[in-house]
Amino acid sequence: MKTSPHVVVIGAGTLGLCTALSLVEHGTRVTILEAHAIASGSSGRSVGVVGTQFTDPFDIVLRVHAMRRFREWESLGLQFNHIGYLRLARTPAQMNLFARSVEMQKEAGLRSRLYPASELRQLVAHLSTVGLEGGIFGPDNGFLYPHEMCNFLAQKVRARGGEIRQSCKLLGVRRRSGAYVLETQKGVIEADVVVNAAGAWAPAVAELFGQSLHICPERHEAIVIHLDPPLEYTMPMVMDLVNGEGTGLNFRHDKRGELIAEIHKAASAAAEDPDNYNEQCNDASKEKLAELLLERLPDLPGARLGRGWAGLYPVTADHRPFVGVLDPSQESLVTAAGAGGYGIQLAPVIGQIAADWVRHGAPVSVPGAERLSPTRDRNVPRNVPLSLGSFN
Ligand SMILES: Cc1cc2nc3c(=O)[nH]c(=O)nc-3n(C[C@H](O)[C@H](O)[C@H](O)COP(=O)(O)OP(=O)(O)OC[C@H]3O[C@@H](n4cnc5c(N)ncnc54)[C@H](O)[C@@H]3O)c2cc1C
Image (tube, rainbow, N blue to C red; front, side, top):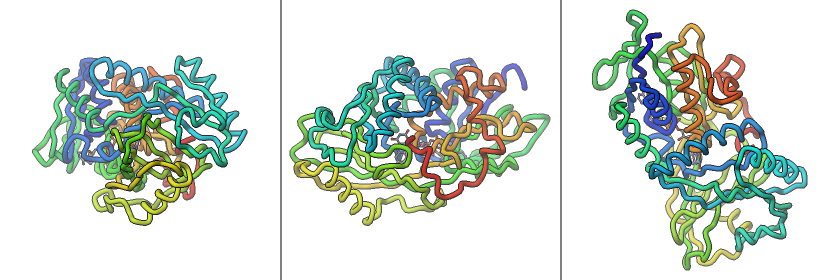
């Protein structure tokens, strides 16, 4: 690899933009190729939740690194809405896991505390606590608007000399004297290193390089709930799913008088064609969501369902992202994709790790991050049903 390589990042979603930013901050020359527009893929369809209420130590480590970056960006003007994140527990065993999580987060400098069922209404006055043991709450967690995040990142990348070419789809790849010759909609561009951050399209991009990448595009839906009159308090993010147990219902404050809700399916959904899937919310999903909301928030005043939409989670077999080199004989092709339902909250740390791979050939700045490499063991077709991993 040259001392000052030209890196081309494929995809201007959160993963591509965060990778590009981590690279340009170290003086690397970067060009992003985006088939459509910034945030036109999954990133622009997400609900933007950033939370650290996890039970696995590595999941917390990743989020500690991500949160550091979010704080830095917040100080530079990125709007981060600190509404807090409440994850509900239905069993004493889940509460024990949460108690450990509180300890781990405390050690890492993050605020979090346990709430027994009897105190949950201090956080969500309308919550029915039927069937609940309690919950874990992180007051500093929250959400951001993904389009704003992507535009913020794009501006930072450009300010450091990075280039973003939109409507510039990668169509083909050749090798010439150790470099990649990339054929795009808008002509040819040469790269010393390529980062595949094409989200649900990452397998198609990998194929152009003769690689086989197993990422499954899963369709997920979100819907707006209108409240009239508006709540007199801010609804935190509330999640009813731990290690595959729970209804998967989740909701959060969006604007005054509006919540956004989703159902996180514990079982894997069917694979979708990212270029041809139903981008609307199905009536059956709306009905299910209304049923679950009535159960958990029975006395919500004047609630009615508003517009809904669907987008794709790019999911790997073990529900952890791929960050690293897939084929040791092609070290100059780095993958940063497969973040599933966490590609907003994990993007800063994935970008940091991907940049490590480009600059050092290893994930030097995040302990344990070699676990995210798309090794042969991990890069396998997804087996149904995988109920763990997502929201553990
Ligand atoms: C309904 C919903 C809710 C979600 N909620 C959350 C949440 O609350 N928190 C969270 O952390 N995550 C959430 N997610 C997940 C998150 O949105 C994704 O994990 C994340 O956006 C993936 O980012 P990405 O950069 O990998 O992919 P994308 O954003 O899809 O970006 C990939 C880009 O690559 C481009 N591309 C594809 N092929 C090519 C090519 N050949 N040449 C050039 N460009 C190409 C595409 O146009 C696209 O813009 C949610 C997702 C959905 C659908």
